[in-house]
Amino acid sequence: MQFPFDVLISQLAALSVPVGAMILIHKRKLFHPRYRRGLLVVLSAALGLALLFLLGVFQYAEAAVAWRLKHDGITTTARIIAIRKAGRVSRTNIHGSQMYDAICEYSDSRGEKFQGIIKLPEELPHTPDTITSVRYLPADPTVVREEYYVVTARDPGKWVFLWLPWIANAILFAMIYSDVQRRKRRAIMIGRSDFPY
Image 1 (tube, rainbow, N blue to C red):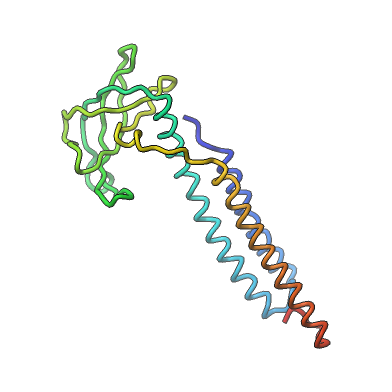
Image 2: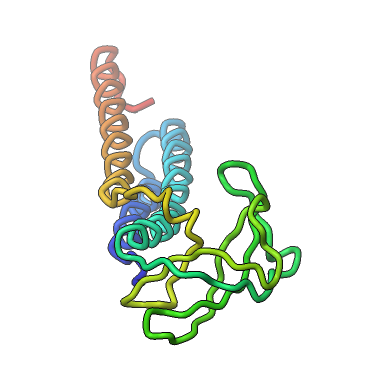
């Protein structure tokens, strides 16, 4: 499975917008100092949100794998060889149940054996030598997930990950532009030249 570099590039480009604006405003000392400080705080908050969006790249990558396995994957049985040691093993999924990384062995349709790592919740058997159902991609049998995980997969909707950060940027800068124009009109009305104050 290829990593979604188009989503990553879009997210990084969107991230560069508030960063570039912050550098430009700070270096060129645009706007009145009091307003500039507030503006930099707003842009810092936007930068934080953009970093959260960036984490969505990895969420999308995993969701895309599950979605492809749901439609193109082949179901087979796998034998659990080992469970990863505590500390690197467990994590909590969205349902709140504990998850375990299990190393499993399975065969593709040609009988070739593969090993992979699957995630199992604590309510499913996850001891060594347990047999479980997995799904792999015929084009790349090393891509494998546990069956229960795949059957609930949904289309991750790439456009959201591609365009949502840009929509957020557009809204942010529209709000900043509107605020600047409002302050400019107010400054002109009261005869002040140190706009925006």
